[in-house]
Image (cartoon, rainbow over all chains, first blue to last red; front, top):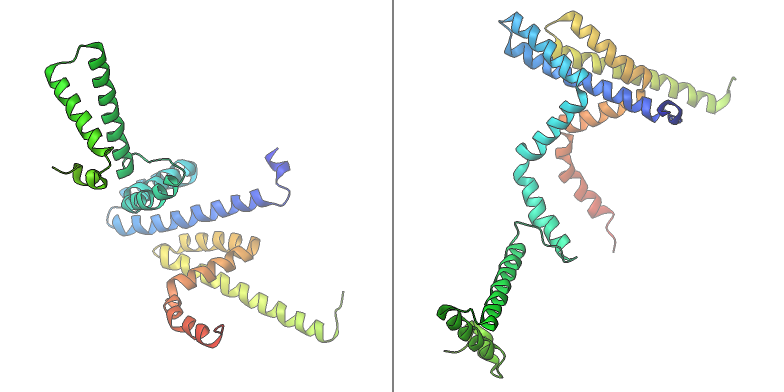
Length: 161
Length: 95
């Protein structure tokens, strides 16, 4: 079916391109192996066979490995920059926050604080609050009153003291 | 079909140039093979034959783009761009 789909000869062309690239990569490797194992012909021969097998028989695996190596090992820091300063702001426009960014951490902290507040309120309502809980609740109410007061400077720096 | 006249002459010289270009391509790939696997003459010839078959005989446009792209990257002509492009900006500036 793939042969039938090859109307414009694109698949056979790409097949030829793949083979040529394999040959070129193999030639570079042969040169490097020769320079490395110039004095040890046995190792040169063995490494040639191994390289040939990997490149011609396991092309896809080797290509994937090399791409992963290049992307994550050699260019890992560039990829990180791309994600943090490129992808995160763009995705942030749609309201999504990527884990690891400052906005994500702030949101997590806010959610944790909110959950704590709700748990505290529940304990107060149930009557199972400890003395520390009651003191914290009083502090919370005071800061809320300060924030919602008519004094416009109340919000700055946690309120006037 | 014998195309005579001026058009025939043009086509003749285009064919001559095309054959010369193919010979240049073949020489380029042979030299590449020699530079990389020159320690073994047989391997050089085998590699050159494979490259020339696929990149000159079967897919000459792919081979041509390989030569042009490789020459652009490795010859250092790209260093001329910051010298040449400002002239275009100066001469063909939109007022």
